[in-house]
Structure formats: structure tokens, C-alpha cells
Image (tube, rainbow, N blue to C red; front, side, top):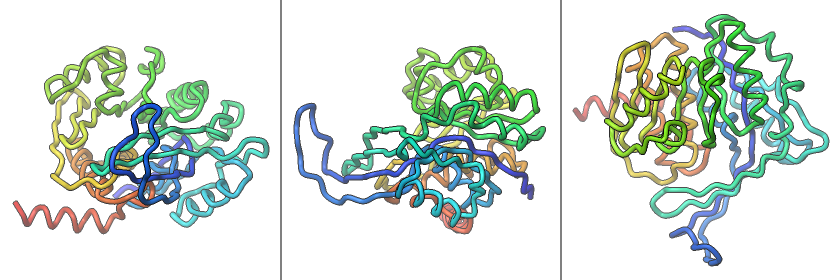
Length: 311
């Protein structure tokens, strides 16, 4: 089993979560239920997911010099993640996310980026020294786009493999897409990038084909409770998700991405990687919170054995 390093570049936030029976209408105030705070941010979430599943992870991020930033650093350190490439911004607050979760497990999220927005190219130039040929770099879009483009460009020159999770959804240039080894949008993100409305496996495959035509080498599209598809190295794969009762879908996509990069880093086939990632995400949605919902490797092994016995 490979233990190559995984480099995650992205955001770190503190999630402030309120559970409620339903989402309020515009202008409406409703009473919620439980309130709690968790460590979050797409970059940190994916780093934690990968670390808990056996990856050797370096996180490149930015936090404020405040109580939230200090708590984030300690939490990531406790997860065994290399935090030496996380900068502490003396002038900007740490990022926060305000999350509402309804009784079906769906969520609404508003993010105030804070220090994440100051992770500019000049602040990550030293990361180039980490990159090696064939190494996986996982990145998302909760940091400035110029930094995303910088990392992707440097990784291409070094021969590293960039996995880009294009979330939150936004348009991407053909130049950026052409340098990405693997793009991992969900249904909404894939629809934004292609203009194709995704409603089933067939429309998802059509969107994936469109993304390949745009220059991306490989594509994985997550379909929520329906599983995920991939167009990978010329082949097509569809993996169904196990049926679960969702409690909170926050960070399910982040857990999927963290698990996916771990599986690929271990040399697994794309089908095996999708199965591994969908199982990890399936466990995560049965739990509250972002990083707190990420399963450990032994949990995934037990989950696999249980589901196999049920077949």
C-alpha cells in the first residue's frame, strides 16, 4: 500500500450549525433546535477525511490569529496532519461558515472567508518545493482563484496530479480545466460548467463527456444518494451508493474527495476508488457536522464487511 504524501490546498473555517425543522422563507424568522460549532472549511475537511482514512497529509491554508484559528490548528495537528504550511494572518479573522440543517439532513451554508481570502499566490510559492512527479494535490475553490490557478500551473510543470473539486460552483477557464488531472464536481457544479441539466446517470455521463471535451483528463461526478460516475482514462464507471438514513449532508462531498484521493494514491482502480469514496460519504451523512462526521479507516473496513454479508 502506497504512503505517498497528499497535498491539500484550501480553506479552513469554523462551522456554526443550527438544526431546524425547515429552512425559513425570505424575511421569515423561525426557531431552531440544537446549535453547535465544528471545525470545517472544504480544504480542512478534505485533509481530515484523507488523514483518517490512512493518507499522509500536508494542508496548505490560512487562518486568523484568533481563537478560531488556534482551535483549527490544534484540531488538525491532533488528526496527524502536517500544519507547517498553514499561515497565520495577523490582520484577517479566521473563516467562518453559518450552516442551517433541516430535518431531512439537507443544508444551507453561508461562508465568510476571512483569512482564506488572503491565501494569495505570493503566500504559497514555497509549496512548489513540496510538489513531486506523480504526487496528488487536492484543491477546491474556497480560496482566491488566482491561487488555485497558480497551484495548478506549478503542479503541471512538476508533473504532479491535480484533483480539483470545483466547489463552491463557479465558471472555470478552458486553460485551467486543461491542466487538471481529475475534476470532481457534484451535479450542480457539473451543470454550471457544462450547461447540461443532470437528472440521471445518462445526463451525468453526457456532462462528463462535455468536460472531457473541454480538456479535462478525467472526470468524476457525484450524484448524491445515487452514487457517482467516472470517465477515467478512457473508461466509464458507475457506482451506486449504499442506502442510508441521512442526518446531515454537510461535508459529504469533502469526505468523498478525501477518500477518493487516498484510494487513488494507494494505486486502486477507479472503480475501487469510487466504491471506497461512496462508502465513506455514506457513513458521513449519518452523522452531524463536517470534520466530526469523517469516518476512520477501520470503520470503513467494518462497513464493507457488514454490507458484503448483507448481499
